[in-house]
View 1 (tube, rainbow, N blue to C red):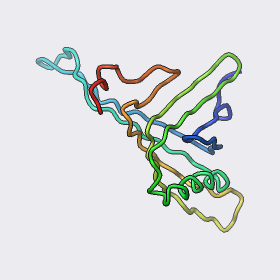
View 2 (view 1 turned 135 degrees about the horizontal axis):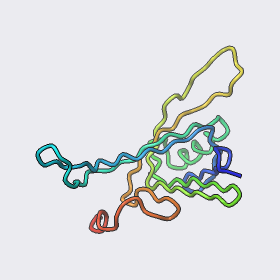
View 3 (view 1 turned 180 degrees about the vertical axis):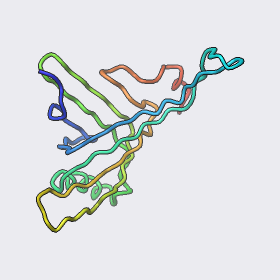
Length: 148
């Protein structure tokens, strides 16, 4: 058996949600340097990570409950997200730290029906812990050692 989208459990902070769709993209701006038009090593650049989850109304209510405790949606502090999948012998755990969520597509109404309404929550990774894949940090230790 192989990992598929159905294999994933997703935790937002302290609670588990069922996502209809999810993504996480890393931008790594390392780039080659050139001497006389020929590649000759590389330089480090900045990194960022963004993603998006799509939730149905029942799962979005869990996020709203957390926002209510924080006093408002924008009052939610960034939280860690964990994507975990296991199928047979295959296992994948992706952790994104300090995720700051926003709302897009709060309403997308089609009067014909036939599909459940989904809310999109894009997020940005804001923590220097950044991303871990199966426990392995994406960043080198020296990239974050003096950050406060």
